[in-house]
Image 1 (cartoon, rainbow, N blue to C red):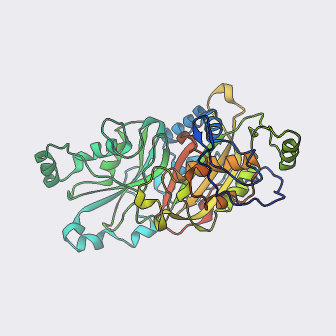
Image 2 (cartoon, one colour):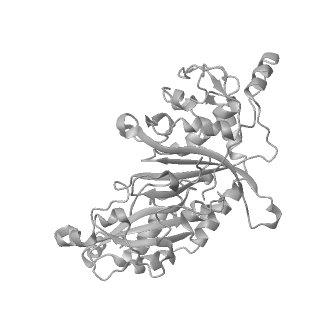
Image 3 (cartoon, rainbow, N blue to C red):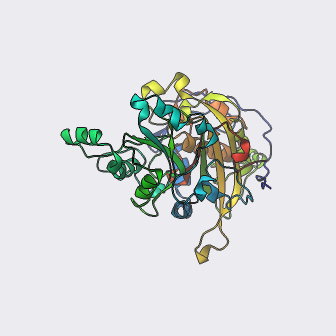
Length: 422
């Protein structure tokens, strides 16, 4: 049976705040141009600096170590079952993890794009296309995308796939004085520090002697304990790890203070009346975060206000719209092999499943949800912020160390795949 999570209860808001859409160009504090929120919680809301300092003051090393152990063991997303106390876990890749020779059967969605039908068409359709499911530790790399002088996942994978490149392509690369490397197309790029448990990429070659097991072994030898190939299977040429995907699952683990005490909205209101100089609270209620973030579920919305560092062409219109299948937050315990941490670390887990995500969108959503919960904002706080005209209305991105790409799905979304269910 699947264990249900019960977030800590929080008092319901008594008044509805106005949308926070005003911007003050004159408001500056500690070098930050502050967004002028106009709701009843404006005096309780953290500034950008306060939010940043609160986020980065957490014991992130425990989360980093937890992710590193999951990658080292090669458990994939199934390794999170113990964290969420689930006796059973329904994830599309778990059956593949039992394989020992690297030749896994195709998933049901991939059977519709059979390898034989592609090869029968001839031409470019005759080349072998491989789907590779990777697990890698974010703290060991400078992100996915290959960049000069940096240790990236893509750079490492493509370097070791170079030995499987066909002769024609290898000759072309050598004539241009370029290194002989493969080309790995990914489902979604991850930033520096972000871990992936079941990232998906693809690689093609004209060579007929390449087997899935060869690719799997080569990648696993590239950087032991830092990157691991969980599944390699030959798929149709029509398969694309990004465009064929129907949903992605991200998990954010946020360490909590053991002695943190939530402050109810009634207490906050009375403190403000008694002391106009009352400072913003330094704790929040996880149940309130859950209520705030649930408002995104089942809606197609533009998340441009929650994105960062996006290209101008992808900062407005349909390119910013995402459909959120699942959005929940809950409290659990993070246990470590360290004998000094037998009691475990109390953490908040935020689970988000959507058809796609914008750059740094998850980290900004998490940070902003925490900020709004601490300020005692209404449950529709995130929805109100979507009407803002400036990204300063949201909080700075939460640290990358807490974020993990759990899985990429190529079948219709099923809520039973999720960890936080109620």
